[in-house]
Image (cartoon, rainbow, N blue to C red; front, side, top):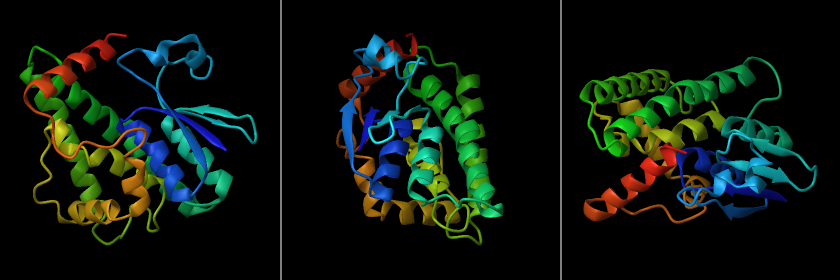
Length: 226
């Protein structure tokens, strides 16, 4: 059994979608980021960095933090979604690292400056939105003659999809990216992907607005400062 400590964020969804795609039994432990559950001693004992997600494998006793490391661990545990050797393995890993080093950080900073900071610093907003758009174009090019990023469906697709699907929240356009659009639609059609983004709570049916948006942004400001 896998115990998953998570919250409804793209990084959290990377773990839950992977678990769903692999068909592994798991138990969800919701971490309330606004209440700083991730800073409690019990959580810090699992992840000293105080970030979600974390898994505990009751079968082996392994505790893994960092979403990319979790995905690799789960793929290797099952022998699925990541080749065990050869060029195909590194094809998957390079696109996983592309998300971890590019898509995730750039979209995360776009969210901070576009959504969460009370002061709108336009050069910073432009910087992160433009770089995110450039990375989207890289994905679109990679998907020109490929159904999935590494040929076959893999953890690389899960990692990138969990972030790219939130493009509206980052204020980034996906216009004129037909290959990316096709891939996004294809990923969304997968039952396990849809199930995973509803962990640990149902995904919103529409974008927040008005007072709900203001309240969410205020809560996010608190999290950013801790």
